[in-house]
Length: 436
Image (cartoon, rainbow, N blue to C red):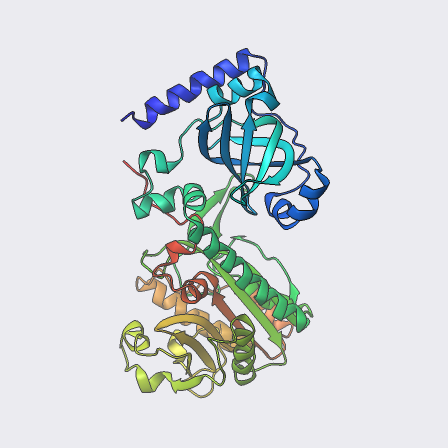
């Protein structure tokens, strides 16, 4: 059996021959009139009218029968059988197809639709144009996609070869769309805040560091957009959200990836009690069958003893459950309920933290005191402790309205709703170790 490099060499030779024949194997223009899904949905009308249409897609199968060749052509919308006939195309054009078109090539085809004797919807090709010559064979030729990690490294092949992979990421897109739909229905405005920050704050996490040559200053990839979104509350925005990438230089496991997608949302004149009801409605909008309010509530102190392991306790919470009223020491941005507890919640579903939210601390004096405690923790070696952000404190001193906010780990939510076992399954291009 030839190696992949030997197969690539054969295709390179074909590519050179195509160019020597004066044909551009990667032309800039296409003339598609219908995607394949449209052609199939309008099949009866188009075939009766014998109307010539132009489709374009990837060749996924080839079957020769003397003076005729059948092929399967696939685009994002669907797949259709096509037939190329020697007497219709002419000897030269037909031979070119046989000699130089391979599985995986992307081809534009013009022709008319008809049904075969077996009733299969088919296009009879009257002319074709090579749009992109593939130099590497698809994995089914060399079994290169059996390794799960290889699927993540080469997601483009995973999407091509595994229909369920594409379905999963279409589901992800639908979940994000429903989030936006719900928030915009409730008059929230989508905003954007800096990814490069002079001080990484808004979450207890170790940041990635970088350097801006133009201004000769260190910068950090954001661990969360929270502190900038709160600045917008000071500025008069009352209902805001952001969906974007965040970065944390921490360990990797089934529920953590160094870069991930977060939805953060803030509402003026709201507290964490109202926010939990809002979250219930949001989740019901995302999936009415899975999420049926009201969700259970349990006190943080009732399930986690001092110094205990959050994950071990959360693993026992299978139905959607709000864990509420966390200690002040681990909630530096949340408003206090009393000397020991804060108005904070985490939504746990099937043992996974999916949402973190709270009534926002808007007292700049208290916030400074909490940041100072965090700085002391950092001095004792806690690299994840938050920093004293003087600019944020100054913004708060102009007056920040009472508010509540939450963050949703979109990757975790998608993994939950698609029964995926790890975040890498639902991130198109997860972080992977460099292959030796």
